[in-house]
Image (cartoon, rainbow, N blue to C red; front, side):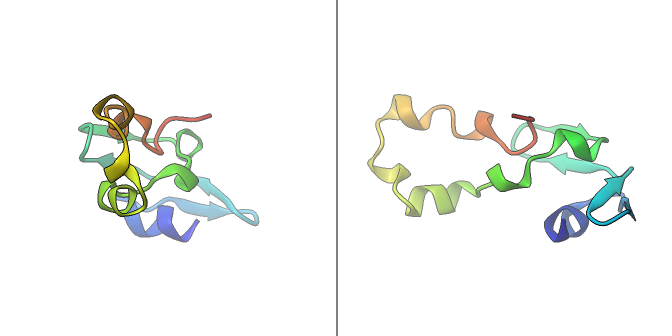
Length: 76
């Protein structure tokens, strides 16, 4: 939740234990806005540089091709 609060363009309200209401986030890598925190999956947001350093540098171009499209903003 801390990451979502820190990265929000419009800060959401914290309701209940770990529930967010409202807020707005911008994703520069695909030029999209998310207005519903339920559409976010922070566990899957990995900077491209970190992915590269963690082994993506050894992947083929085909394997690397979808990294930005597999961003954290899409629900599972």
